[in-house]
Amino acid sequence: MLNKTSSRAMAAGLAFALAIGAPSLVLAAPASVKVLATVNGQPITDEDLKIATEDLGPSLPAQIQGKARESYILDFLIDGVLVAQKAQAENLDKTPDFADKLAYYHEKLLMETKLSQIAKAALTDEALKKTYDEAAKAQKPETEIHARHILVATDADAQAVIKRLKGGEDFAKVAKEVSKDTGSDGGDLGWFTKDKMVPEFAEAAFKLEPGTISEPVKSPFGWHVIEVEGKREKTFPPFDEVKDQVSRYVVQKAQSELVTELRKTAKIDRAEPEVDPNAPPAAPTPDAPAPAAPADKK
View 1 (tube, rainbow, N blue to C red):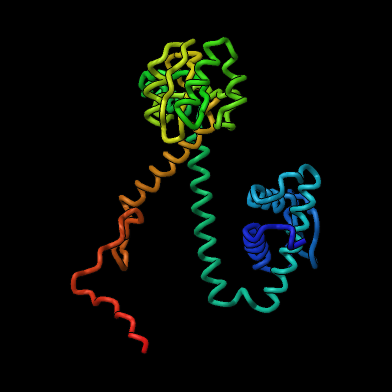
View 2 (view 1 turned 180 degrees about the vertical axis):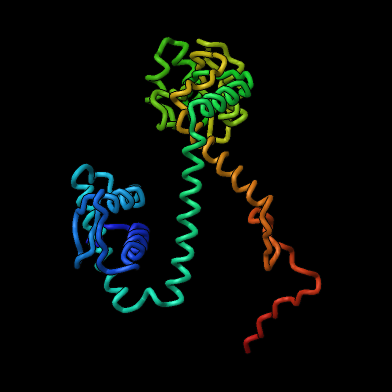
């Protein structure tokens, strides 16, 4: 069973098993919980299963669902308790390394618990609506177009395409036959704003009126023939489409504000100056010794 989980899930599960097994090898379960299994007398409850599911859920195979998923996690917990009991019998929980890691995970769990509390408090309907409305209000008016294109290798090829189109052939049909851009269906690029395309293409496309076809346009990718099908002012997406993004922003903002406030009132002494991870590497000092030249081989 152990080999069915990722290394990350195993590490988390063993830490959990060690934590619940550390006080005693045999613990009585509270009357309010349901015992799902016992391992050498130690109970594993539905509460244990709930905690493990929250912790391991994202790392578990997506195809395992329902009762099979619960059974999978319970087997994982059983294996974890067995290994934890073996480790405790060998007094591995008495080592300095274990104590250091236990302290680290204790603080990490406290941090995650507090941040989770902050997240729940921040996710109100009022906060989500306010954030959405502010973002919608801040969006500047911007034009977007719906266009198709046919990409070919040379100006002569583009002229040949234009001749076919002016002769009445369907744009999508010609695109499927000759366009080098096989990633778009019939050359359809959908709706886009000017900044989404390379400058040469964008300049030409946004000058066209709906229903018109461009002259050959050269870009770093080749030669394009462009047809604009529609033009409109970009609208802000409906709330339901961006609710998840808004929620993440609200949570991250609330958690970041908490950390910022805590840092303001905390006394923090660093042994060495803080290093900006985005700063470029320091240039070598002028008096630094030059690397030795390789010795001549004779």
